[in-house]
Amino acid sequence: METAEYLDKLLLRYSGSFDIYQPYVINDKEYPAYGYFFSCVEKYILIRELNMWSTRSYEHILFIEAEECTENILSEAEDIIENYMEPVLVRKNEKWPEPNHMYSYLNVVILCSKPVEQKLAKKIKRYHFEKGYKFNMRGFSKGSIMCVSMEDRKYISNYQGHSKKELFRRVFSDVDQGKPGFAQVMEENGLTPFKQQI
Image (tube, helix red, strand yellow):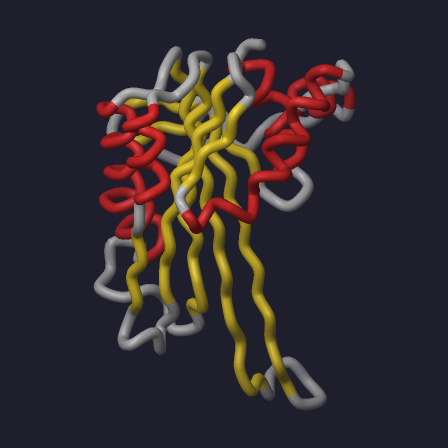
């Protein structure tokens, strides 16, 4: 199974609630896809102008394709979460996130052809990133690294990524059953992925 085929099916599942950008560039390097999710919950009295409170929640997910998962790729994933996603996507290069920020989940998915070495699997499982803002009055960010290997069909993640395990396993069934992918569905509906504003 090719990583591109798996990614195509995975993106279709994510596209139900995420804006999908293809491609996506970070520091002059191009990645196959990035997904963005935003939710705003407000409480107001009678009319919207009398807003009592509002909360904004975000999730970012970047996809990396590789022949195999290596130390360099894991370091790259960690660097993206800690030095790009958190300061640029969450804080917009400011000291704090916006006032109504509740949380941001920062995810990097590594899709590789070969099985993951045991020492690297342990490193993925041990990965931890969490940052609070103003004693969490401005919310928090949490990071996760997820790795899916095509050859042995294994899903490995840190604790933060455990909840997505079943989703990633179901994508293998989508491929086996020949279900349409993101590219096909977009083309059939005359749509194109979002484009990054650089």
